[in-house]
Image 1 (cartoon, rainbow, N blue to C red):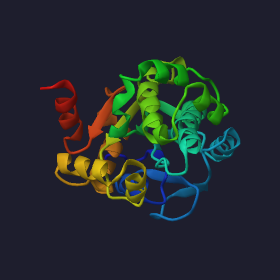
Image 2 (cartoon, helix red, strand yellow; image 1 turned 135 degrees about the vertical axis):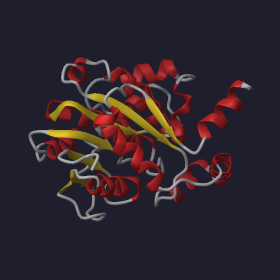
Image 3 (cartoon, rainbow, N blue to C red; image 1 turned 60 degrees about the vertical axis):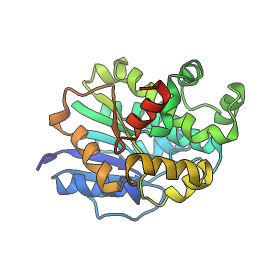
Image 4 (tube, rainbow, N blue to C red; image 1 turned 120 degrees about the vertical axis):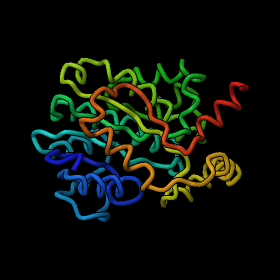
Length: 262
């Protein structure tokens, strides 16, 4: 019972990776509280209906959290189909706002585990833009931030994950987390068979998705990703901090080989 006695919050708990993560953490002994815009998914210790697309929504969610928890799993996210502004608002600024507001609830040695994506691979190439957007404090007018940074509508999803990957590394050393002994880690799946995969086909096109699946050998499943997240919530991961774990069937290795020419 790797997570026995722990209290874990899982956003996006109604479906996909979030649902399987919540279910697995409960099976491993944790008290799990799900957060989602709609009810559904596995039977858990508690559920909070909430929306991460605004500061008011974040405040309403955190106001219902227990005083002390052991981990926050940031799984909820949008595919990019609703548009760049809503996607970046939820996938990055909402996730960051929830994490910052939750920091004081997390016991020393606890974790924040962010679900990023292989789609954020370009954060290094786009570092100047990513640094500037991560430096925007609070929950901003996201549409205005995107306009200021000349972000195209189709860039919403990969941009949100680029920002998340950079912020994960920065957050691990920020006082609000580090002084409380809170680890901050990200997990980057490749294409995963979830309800959102069809939306990725609309956003990226069938060829991109099919090529990624072929490079990995098969599409992943929520059951491939959830154990990685659960492990990062455990005491066995107590020396893992500020890094990204690629849970993608080898896709990042294939992309590296192509991009770097080895």
